[in-house]
Image 1 (cartoon, rainbow, N blue to C red):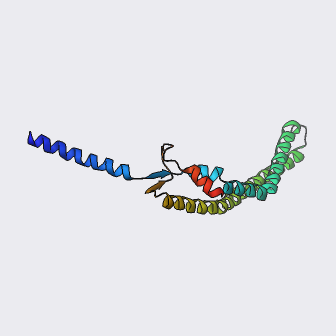
Image 2 (image 1 turned 180 degrees about the vertical axis):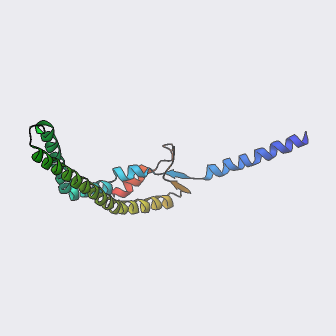
Image 3 (image 1 turned 90 degrees about the horizontal axis):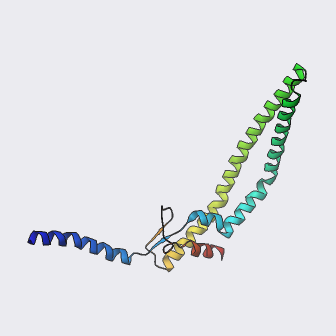
Length: 165
């Protein structure tokens, strides 16, 4: 009987201590995806990127239309064209497609690089806001990427308000 009591006490003591520690622990969660999507800085960065890359995107769209039009022309008129003319148009389409793929790849690479540059500033300001709130409100732990977080520990709205000031 004494052994059973000691065993139960040994099991119950750490569980009680963990509950006490957990009760004193202040944890917060920040949804960084929302911060990058909804903060004023993120929206400004997105608009800046759209404006910066708009003309290149329009050129690519223009080239896509040209390639589609040429493809449609070859499908409709291909049988009535001379062999030389059809070969010329097919070569033209192949060159256009190759140039288009090259332009699209460069566009994506440049856009991704600029997006990373722009959002690095947003991330830096967000980190400062998170640390400021964590220190001011005496958080023990702030977590960003989680599978689940209740609204009770979600401080994303406070971070957004802090960033938008």
